[in-house]
Image (cartoon, one colour):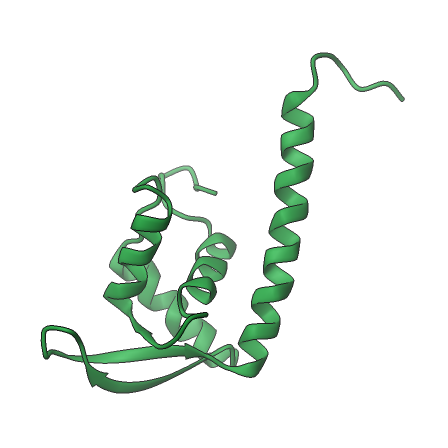
Length: 115
């Protein structure tokens, strides 16, 4: 979901980050690239909101991080899901699936809803 400026809404970015690291540790650039590829470049994550979200998710205990080296041998912070982060991802996915289903149903209606 996008905000008025074309950026990702906070809840959307959070669930995408959690999903991106669900297969293993990932650095910020890798997370942004995963989102870009997974959405066929429809959603692009800017650096500022990404790192703000990563710090927030870490503070909430849903991500843990440690320093390591990226594919091109640059020092980078790698993020991974914690146990509570995995549970949060499951909750977020369920919430998003219900939301998408409800909006899709409403948009598919050919006339006003009857009370």
